Image (cartoon, rainbow, N blue to C red; front, side):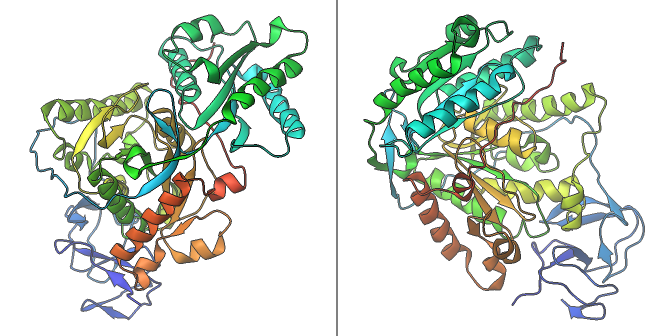
Length: 491
């Protein structure tokens, strides 16, 4: 087993891949302290103020002299990052050679899109009717303990839809509209109360084109028994959706979201680079991947900007980054509060450290599109998407932007899943073994002998199966949540 890794020849630190003992000698360096798996140790003397280099790039600067063999972490280094920056476009993206396409079994939709699930959804327009939405689904399921050609019936509740104004209100409405027209949805009941800000008439007027056979509307205040009426409308949707059948398409038809949560020191070494290779593979066959978590691009943004396909995409990426920094500043918060306590416990020290590891998920392909607030993905290839790093918000944003599923890397573990299938990929095998009811795929075997190429084929096969109907762990445990990004005041 490999016990340590120097990721880039330019690095002045190495990462422990297992717990290392004080006095041990690695890369010609004698350790001055015990080094926990995922944490860093110095390969050379690093003077106070000198950059600490990992992934071939600065991840911060030493706050005191660091001796060769010493543990390098929050006690002796800190971020170099500050506020908004001016960027230059130095394009160096590459066009990937075409890969070997796979096929998937998917549901064709009226507009030429496809879904990887055929589910019935109840979506409240306002949080006041959350319990009614859940009751409609629960009673419908009692009437239909087994379903024909429908993969499930779910209520996606949230606390918003009223007492919001301006951009915040519009974002809530837009995200719910994007859910309602998602191709994984075979039929949707949109449930309102009747007196909320998120009025049904305005919602319909701005919904855009949709399949009228797959959408029903209900205002609870307008009927005597909203539960019975809701069940009746859901029954109409079911009668239509059960006629849907899977057909074969190339795997390039799917859009894959890229997300990490609860990162550790192995995230940028195992799971994230593996997902980056998968992203390159999907892009190479004509498919689409989407990277979000804008604050976790801070410190690695120039690398993404230099991979932009053209000047216009570069300028939109600059806007994406600086707008999110402005959001922090408008709320009187530091831009670089990350990483979280769990990240730090796993060996991640600064936001640059985290970002350089996180952006490994994007692979090496060119950035072909950027989706800002409320926009849907309309470019094949690698895209960037506006939004925070919060797991629930980010996965909701990815689904609303049009992703069919999300690859979610984690070093700490989480049972969470979004309203689209959420494939949890562990960075280390101990987590995969300990939480097998959460983790779908173990990337940790990369440090114990498996090649990236073998794991890429294994992951691509697994995604192919999920796209064709195999249930993920979050689906099996019914861990399905949404969280709408909120930035405004509550009235």
